[in-house]
Length: 311
Image 1 (cartoon, rainbow, N blue to C red):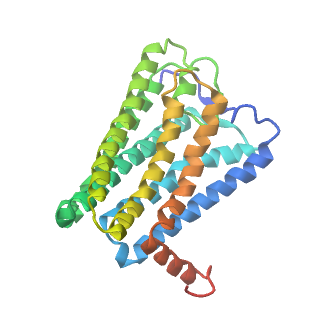
Image 2 (tube, rainbow, N blue to C red; image 1 turned 180 degrees about the vertical axis):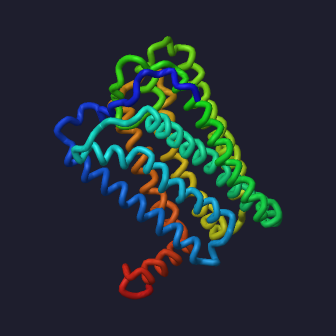
Image 3 (cartoon, rainbow, N blue to C red; image 1 turned 60 degrees about the vertical axis):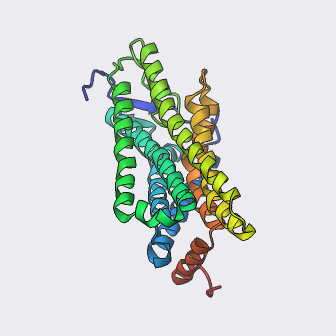
């Protein structure tokens, strides 16, 4: 990537209109971050330690938990650092790295949700062919494919942003380096790039969402054909957690990147939801409606000494 910039570092101004609230925000966001790490690590331990959960659905959930650990780690440590009174400066390379990994992990999760919807579609609509279609090899290919295409998308967006010259203001009116705020600092006309970025960022999640919608339309139709009320309830319960997680993931994306006007304070608030709250809630969402995960979690907590006895 060619560096045309004379700016060697940027200054992160943080969340707009929160002056004087640094201590309160530090405690709040640190709590979110710790619970996110702990919750997703517990889900990982529960899945890895239980042979009953060694199935495609939980394999993808395992990868989602890994990415839910790394995703908030892109922006949270630096934010917590300057909220505690340390420097707000971030190097040019650090800013580019932050933007790349934010979109790499975010795009990969977007693709992963699509793959998880396809997995549920095969399990419910083609149960007799499930093990054949969702073979070990197919799961590995799908998992690697989500990361591969996420990397391509992130590389394109990062190159698009940092091929611009940054030669003047270096104060980022945000709490981490993201495309909309970086384009405002560029010493060049960014209208064409804003349009390209808008199409790129908008087209990918929209395409994934349409694929998810297609999968779940077929799933709902198949569930309604099940004669047993118990069978319908079980099928709905296995899908409801995934649908809830999808809504929590896509709503912030739409609000941040697909609005015609930019509002730094609203964007920051929604971004906090996307970066910290959603990854923290995912372990809860996927364990509450799943008896197998809850049972495995109880065993893990008992072995770690957090439960006095196995329930």
